[in-house]
Image (cartoon, rainbow, N blue to C red; front, side, top):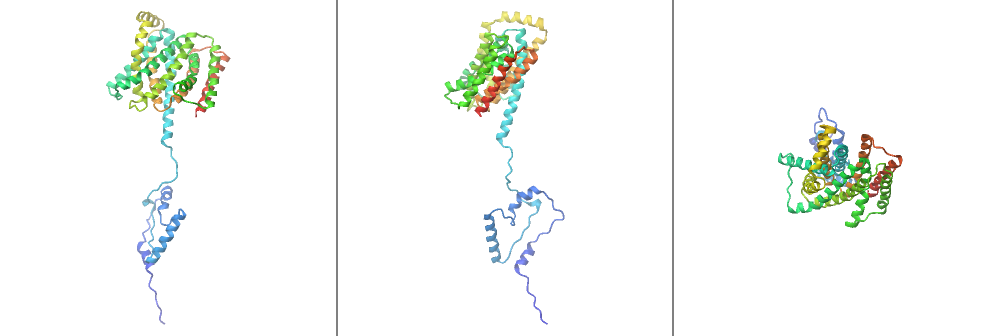
Length: 387
């Protein structure tokens, strides 16, 4: 009996030729396999890939065989998967949040020491001058020792900075005068009306328009501040007007600062350092004219005799923390708009008001607290309307 043996086809020979030994131990990692599954010749991810696979198979059949390959998990190539990771915008929000939290904490400490100093030494012009002088000295030392890089400025920079310095000086002195006459909580309740001034100034001087909800949100802010002022137990007109003037001045400062910082290579930290130095030059002659060295010497001696050496620490602390909280606020302003800055500045007052009432045992009537709560609620509504 004669039997015939058919030769093995060329396609099977090709398959045998390209077979790869299976590793004794494959490393299993689900994510790389998923990522690289699409790169495998056996992967069908879409109708397009299906047609490509079919055409390729037909061509290889006509050419005499298939080339079969297998991917090992440890030799696969990664592809993109549709998994979202936090972007740069989320990181920026976290950064601004940290700036705001630090700014608020430093501001609480400053207000406590500032009020202690003013209670024992009621000379707001000198107190304001010392705050600016301390910050200027701190930044000069940091530049000389190269702890911070000194800014590169020109004449145009200082010209642009001048109106900012004028507004900053007025706002700083006015707020200090206010706190020397009334409770810290009352000053900050009145200063919580800053968004109203911000909208007004932006509308009249910048030509900006706002939706109706923004204007309506100003009503509880204004009403709450008015209620708190009328029911304040220790109301003082100088203190009230100082807070109002400070509101207006700081709104102009924020707007001028934002314009001056646009297209400017100077960082927010160095920008505020230069601002402090120019403000110091502006306020010093007025401080000497209004109060004078003789009043300062007598007041200082009286404060030290009553408080003791701690008074010197209070003066140093309020000066240092004043510069630090403003420096952080300008680092925030470098990232956000003036209106957002005003909202953050107002929300900060909640912690200042509560802390000052607790520490200084400030008497407050229920209706006065209601006014403060309405004003703060209006600020929250305002921020939501803006968003």
